[in-house]
Image (cartoon, rainbow, N blue to C red; front, side, top):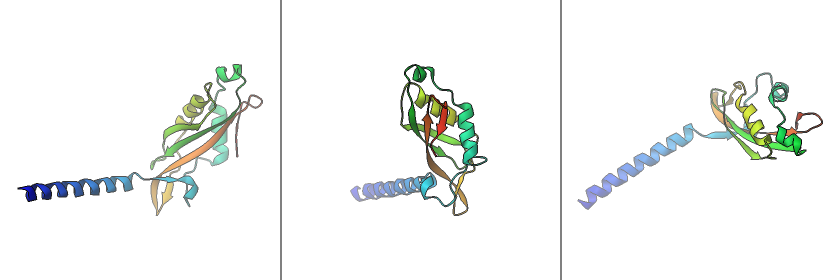
Length: 140
């Protein structure tokens, strides 16, 4: 009886480990820095800068407090090119973090990253500089 129970447990455990490994490989997220064919914003980086500049509104709270600096944001470009998991990595507060995240969530679909002729999920990071003198600039 104990042997049979042990066999069943080992079988279930090996099945669940096998299933977890399959899921992990399918959902792996690659870093854009290490990719030969990373994701591309439609029209390239100049269009990304234009998109951000046209859509980001300097938060009133940040204006009142004279807050300026860079918000570092990370996000995932999915296999279909959509933007997901937008998060501030290092922010300024006073509404700037939320504004950077809000606009990135509005992004049109990107051309996805490709590895071995297959679209893959890719993590991407960008710095967005908030400056009261020029409303918004992107650090290049």
